[in-house]
Image (tube, rainbow, N blue to C red):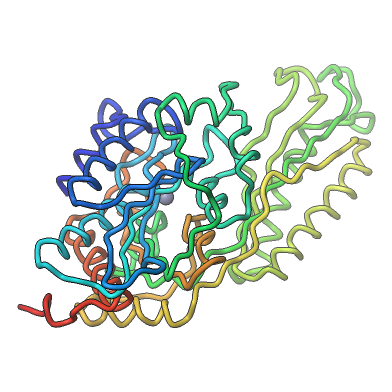
Length: 406
Ligand SMILES: [Zn+2]
């Protein structure tokens, strides 16, 4: 808790919460704090070319490490737990092993991945994607932020342009402790979410083009109203998700009208559609239904339309033995558990492509996250960190008796 509160001082917002946009001065300050903790624990710190930081504690054998970690960047008005918890809990595991002189067969590593949030630079989870080899280094370095800055330049400016190669590192297994960021655990009073995988995501931007015209004189049947089109897409998204059922969710988060005036029929609309599902076939079906709907609706209203894919991730199932391990360790500590998918994207879903991976969720009060009021109780954090500790002890082949105690 002390470390969480200390990190929260970097990029602190008045009245609580954090703003550490990727590669900003605040992100740099947060990184510096975490790296200083890593070094104080005697870890070997390696920074790669996109700024991912991996700190390693040697094992009795060489070879790939059992890794844990998350991210330290935040959204513009973020809480103090999202990402930070997973990184600092990993360091807490190391500190516990150090305090008790526990040796492990395999090395243990704690990592934080660059630009997880994707607020300033896209794509999100950029660092872990490069780490896992799904996004190239040049593509990441050349990403242009909403403020016109270049990722690679900003990375260098804050001192985190490392020289370790990306996408070459072997990892034995990966665990990420994270707040749920949703209401399931909090509302059911459950301690630990055993995450079975991450749902798939499809982000599309629709651009509609009609004709700007006088709101008073243009007959209803003569209108080509982009605002109407945007509203139709929004209500179809809701209708479709309800109809499909299962784990399908659909959100229109942005409607941008032009000229956006009270007495003018909107000429253009930019509409974003966020579709998610744990089932890839169902997700593809939702995409098709949406596309067909827009086509039909736009034709009827006399609108031109175009679509642009902003992001597309297939659902990621985690490794069943890793998921079972989390569940067993949580129950071993007397915690209540619930198996669930993750509704949000996480670095772990990228790591899942290169090694056996799982996630541990702890409750978010009222399901609130990406918000300065994000809160998880210290005892819930302790429960999650203990599951992480026990799982890492087993995965790394620790002398299991050392930490047995009351
Ligand atoms: Zn996060």
